[in-house]
Image 1 (tube, rainbow, N blue to C red):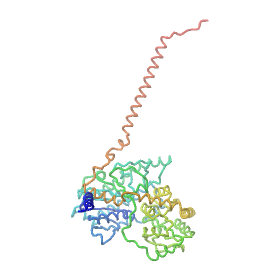
Image 2 (cartoon, rainbow, N blue to C red):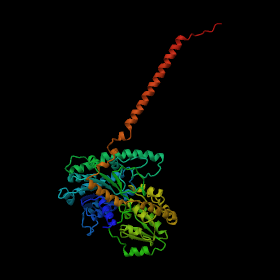
Image 3 (spheres, rainbow, N blue to C red):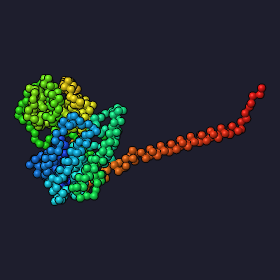
Image 4 (cartoon, rainbow, N blue to C red):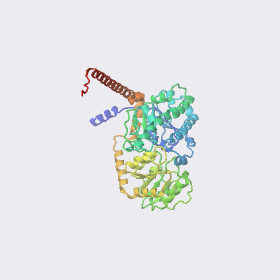
Length: 518
C-alpha cells in the first residue's frame, strides 16, 4: 500500500463521524425569506444521509431528496394578510412587536393544531435533534416528547430576549435592538432612547409575548416545564448573520453565526420574455423589489405614484416585482413580474442597481452578486439594515415616511448608478465575506452533527446565561461599594464635625479674652 493511500485513510478515519440521524426541523414563519435561509441546510443534511423532517410553509418538493420529508403549512400565509399598508403608515419600533407577536401567536397555535403536526406528537419514530425557529419557542415542547437536544435557529439576528438565554451581551448602545433604526455611533438622544427601549422590550416580552407562548405550550404539550426553562435548556443558537457583512458582536460559544450566501435550492429560470427584456438593456437595467412581505401592489396611492413618476423619468429599463396583473400608468420602460427569481436577476450581467426594502437576504444576495443598492426601509430590521449598508458605502437610503419623495428617490438612484465607488465597495465587501475557512452552511451542518454526536452541547453553555441580571451588571457590588463609600464619607464628616466642636469648645475655655484698657 502506498504511503499516500495510508495518509488518506488515516485522514478520513480522523474526521469526526456522525451516523445517520433522524432530524426534526420546524420553521413556522410564513415568509419566503425566513424559509430560504435554511433550505440549503435541510438539503445538505439529507444528502449526507440524515433523515430530515421539516415543517415548512415553502417546501422544496424535490423528488431527488429522498431523505427529506416536508410537512407543508403553506396555508399559514393567511395569518399575514395585508401588512403593506399597515407598516407603511403606522408601524414603528414601539408597536412593531405588538403587531407581529399577535400574528406569530396565531401561526403557532394554528400549526400545532394541524393534523400532520399533531401526528408528530404521537412519537411514532425517534428524533435525535430538534431545530426550531427562535420566534416560536412553544415548539420546543417536541424535544420533551422525543427527549432530544435542541437548537434554536433564526433567519436574521436574534432579538435580545433570545440572546439573553445564551448569555450573550446585549448592550443597548453597542448593539441596539434590531427593530430600532439605530446603528453605528449613537448620539446622546439615541443612546437614551435605545436604553429605554431595551428595558421596555425586555418587560414586554416577558409580560405579553412569552405569556402567550406559555398558554400554547400548556395547551398542546404534556409538560410541566415553562417556556423559560425550555429556552434555558437549548443547546445551541444558530443566527443567520455574518460579522463581515453585518455588525460585529460578542457571542458565547453556544451561539453560532451561520450567515452568508444561500443559493436558492430550487431551480429558478428567468421567463423568456423577462430574459429578453434584460438582455436588451444595453445601458443596464434596474431591479425594483420590496421583498415578499411588503407588496408593491398594496402601497399607498401617493407612494405608488411617486415610484411610477420616478421610474418613468429614468433612461433605463426597470424590472419591477409587482404582485398584480395591471398597473395603471405603467411606464414603457418598466416590465412587471409577479414573482421574481431574485438570484437569477441579480446575477444578470446588465444589472446596474437594486432598489430594495432592506431585507437581510436581499442585502446578502446583492453583495454576492456585486450589485449596489438604494434602500427604502419599511419595518422590522430593515431600517437598521439600511443604515448598515449605507455605513459600509454600498447603498443610499430613501425614507418612505412620512411620504416618499420622488425627487430624493431619483437623486439616490442616479447617484448609485453613476458613482463607481458604490460598485467597487460592494465588490470589496464580497471578497472579505468569501475569505473565510468555513461557509455559514458548512458551520450549520458541522454543528448540527456535533450536537447529534455528543447528544447535546450543554458543556458550551455560557455561564453568563445563568447569572441574574443584577449580578451580571454588578448592581449589587456597585451598590455595596457605594454604600461603603457613603458610610466612610459620612463617618469622616461626623468625625470632622466632632473634632471641630471639641476644639472650638476647648479653645473657648482655655484662651483668655484680652479686654482693651483705656
